[in-house]
Image 1 (cartoon, rainbow, N blue to C red):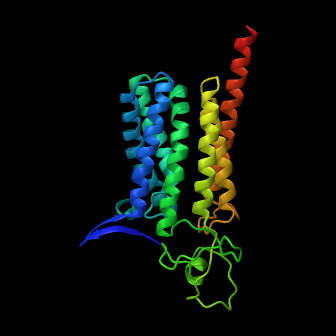
Image 2 (cartoon, rainbow, N blue to C red):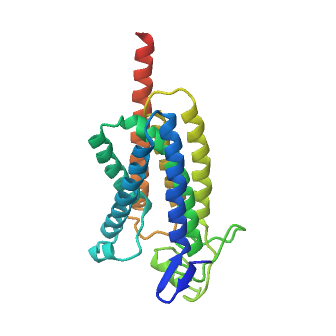
Image 3 (cartoon, rainbow, N blue to C red):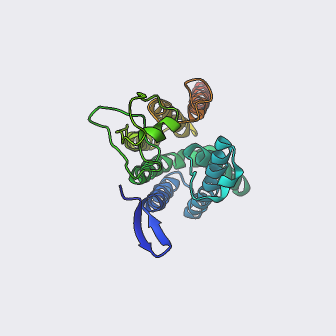
Length: 267
């Protein structure tokens, strides 16, 4: 556990903040390379990263505040929720692309691998501060977070709605699924899949559609073992509902682009 990297008095640099910074830097570098591959400008890539950063942070905070029904959370350091950030970033970048008249599907195809590698690095930050972990497990992959956010004690896990044997004292430290690492590994695989897909001839939008499907499937599955207190839909979380929507939208985009490609070839 390395939640704080450097601290001088009241000023500190957290490992989560560092990994978020690296996520934007590496994601932006991949985005710039992909923009050039798709015939788009470096200036547009830089502006997209800025729009994604601002829209992503605002979207993440709004999503978090809505989820916990507390608008005061907009002004705290916590609450950078991925799906809220993804939605906010997409909206901000879409507005920018519309204003600059950039080909939408060409741009989101170029951005998809950058999103995947950025997500990969961001989840490592979550691991280093002990946030967004999973349910208790006795398997060899289990990791305890004594100084997590919050710690993986029986009491905190019960607060998440996790069922734990009543005989286990509240102060007991439990090992949990390191879902942050599961997601980081899955996002790295997604990155290579998307890069491979981007290098092959494809109709505009196909890479983005593939990203939405992969992202939705990955998140839906990992939520099964996540320690979450937002299971508003029976055993399902809000993130799983959004995951299903992403898969449906991604499937629709792939289907539409496939049909459009077949129609052009037939003509």
